[in-house]
Length: 236
Image 1: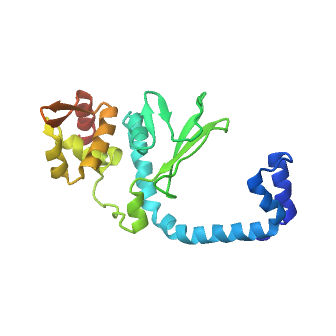
Image 2: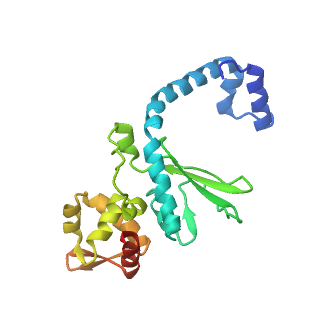
């Protein structure tokens, strides 16, 4: 980028904007070489920060690929989609994505590719313009731990399919709710904060795997028939 001729940048802007360059780009036209040098420096500093995290993300990316793949193998693609992020929501056959300028897109027979990214817990990337595939980029699970260097090491023991597909928290919730369980007791027993527990229970409830009901001042949680069938399938 540092070696890119300024005329090439100016030609690209002309092609992109058809001669009507927006106000915010006019300083680039006035000083194209300075802009190229500054942008290249920003990109280099960004990569210097990201490179160690990207290098450390290999195991986490492989585990996420295994989780999504296992969801498909066991015939529950909705679990792969519903576990993406609190900012993504699966409503029947519609995947709702965060966007300040929302539009409706139909796959029209295209494959949907799920792409975990390590660029930030608020990352939201997607593209629907290719003729054969649409892809959605979402934050890699445990991304905060990855950035802080606290990502757990991969286990050498036989993987637990329930944890592989659902994640640690949701698998633990299903395991603990074979009978109706007090929400507060569930939170303290599993060691998750009430807000975290509510989030995971909401997603499991959206998938039809648990049900919550109020009894007096308490909220009780129990597995549904579908939740029990799925848990039995994954643990036998």
